[in-house]
Length: 169
Image 1 (spheres, rainbow, N blue to C red):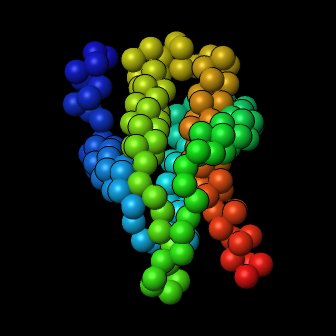
Image 2 (cartoon, helix red, strand yellow):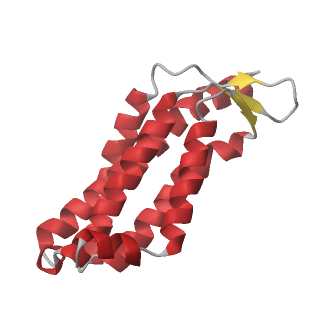
């Protein structure tokens, strides 16, 4: 299968997801008010997408899921460190909302994450012999988990201090 055929045969939901994620990343460039629970939208979305792809796109889903867990833990540490310099959540004038500072970090990670996931998911279609290998299943799980872990680590880096401060007040 050629790359042109791959792009042509990519399900429409993948392109809709890309547009949604790019919109979320563009919105993240600016300060915005949100409910604290909305912070978890991207980490949960990438977790669901990751588990789905590991189960449906690899020949050894058990191995890939274990590696995804390991990748998620490493990614969470990386995400925590990446968001270390980001401004903390601020209290909003509207009760029940917080203000999250804008950053290009989210958009950049979304672009890298989507591209990586697209490439990983495409390998079994472009090179079926690679998709069947144990090494590919390990790499697929690790990278899928790592990407999701970055979102979890960044989100928790913002949420935990805000939650502790709110609980102690």
